[in-house]
Image (cartoon, rainbow, N blue to C red):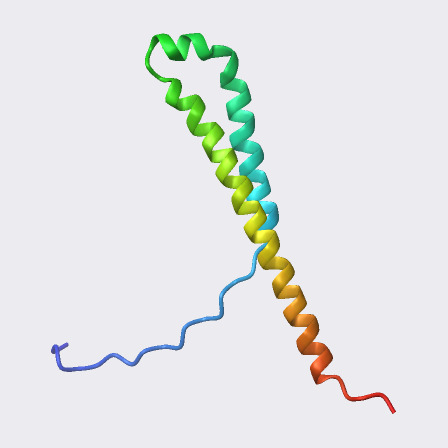
Length: 94
């Protein structure tokens, strides 16, 4: 194929919608459980210079809480928009 030939572009597919709230919730729980499981071994981690393992898990769960707030707000805004669009397209009652 020469460099002057153009390959026709395909239209981008619609984005897939997933249950983002459930996905983020599972992630937050996993990070927090890892934090709690490692906490009793803080002394060992400290002796070996690996306390960052524990704090990474806490940071992951904290950032996940921010992400959870974001995806819930996004989900609610999408639902509001969909309801408003459906209301606008409904024929008036006689």
